[in-house]
Every structure is written in structure tokens, then in C-alpha cells.
Image (tube, rainbow, N blue to C red; front, top):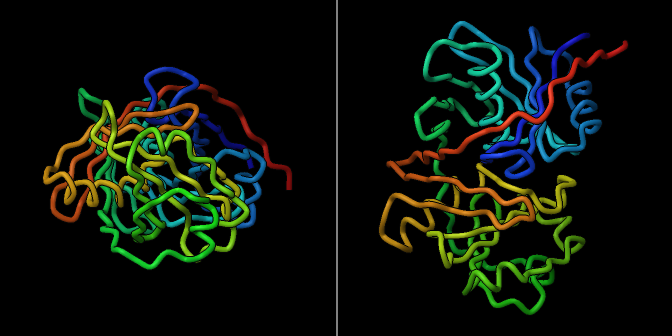
Length: 261
């Protein structure tokens, strides 16, 4: 098998910020074990694979540990590859995925993703979640991740989780958020059970964060910042049961990959 791999910094305006994703255009789907092996070899938080079709593209996402149901930054990166390198002529690409129909539209402001909203609900925090937070006071909710709300951006920046405590949580990961000092809200995202202790910029997490902050701040438009070491900015909008996330992408690498079998 011979294919081209693109490595793209998503939610970035220049190289070495945002979240790097590997993107593989494929003609047909190989066995899942090969997709997982490639993702483990890349050792990035996500590797996206897609196969083009008459209606758009089918997309799948793999961490070094497992396939996941939804990934924002790797979808943004895949759309960038389709528009920029595969010369897709339409202004919108439709993706079919394990999370249903998704779309990415090319706009003057950047690539705009249309994703399903997931509203978190208050829950009783598992003991392991609290142990990982240490003595940090927090409000805890849950959607497909645990959502932890802190009382300040400073507390979020200073948080040093115990990742070992979160390895056996029943949900995908832990998203920690707070009202921002210069942004509408800020966040950090942790997925130790997927071998991604801290994810640089997480589009899918904002499918949960935007509905929460829309209710808390009584508005629908946000500028959000993920406070990882690399950092990234997302322009967000809630519309009904959909979340629209806009960001840019920057190429880092293009390589030929030959899989010997």
C-alpha cells in the first residue's frame, strides 16, 4: 500500500501552534488493525483517514490507542487537505462518520465545521476524577467527557492533574474550563486513557463546552482559547442542536508512506 500522508497544524495561524493531525487520503479501506498501527506509529493525538465518495467523504479517526467517535481538529485538517491539496471545487465538504453527518465549509474567516451539540448535565463526580484534580474546587458535569468548571483562568492554567487517577474513568476524558480573562471561555483537555495526556486543541470538546457556556452566559457566539502549551483559538457558534467551529490550518509536512505487507 502506497499513499500520501499530510501533517497539518489545525486551529493554527502559523506552524507549531494549534493541534497537529496526520491525514491519510485512501482509495479503499484497509483492515482496522492497519489503521490503528499507522496511528500508533504517528504517535499524534489523532490520525484521520478518509475515502472520497460521490457525496463527499467517509472519515475515521484514531488515537495511538483506539478509534474514536468524533474528532474536531483532525476533521478540520482533513478538510484542509481536501480543499487545498486534492483541489475539491465545492465550498463545502460533507463527511459521513461514526457521529453521523458532518460538514466543513470554506469561508473567508477559515474552515467552519458543523458538528452535533452535546449538552453536559450535572453529575456526582467519581472519586477518581476528584483524586486527579487534587484539592481544586470545581463544578462537575458530564456529556461524552467529564466537564470540570473552575472559578478562574488562573486556576485552570495552574492545574496539574494526576493522570494515573483518570486512566479508568468510564467516559472518554476530562475537559476543564473556566471563564476567560481575554476570551469568552478557556479550557484544557485531558485523555490519558487514549494515551493523550493533554490534547493541544480539541474541537470535539467544544461540542460540549459551547452549550454549557451558552446557557451560563446567555449568548450564542464565542471566542474560545485552549490553554495548552501550543494553544489554539476557536470561533464558536451555537445554533439549535449544532455547534459551528471556525479555525485555520497550516501545513507542516507531506510524505509518501509505503506499507509493506
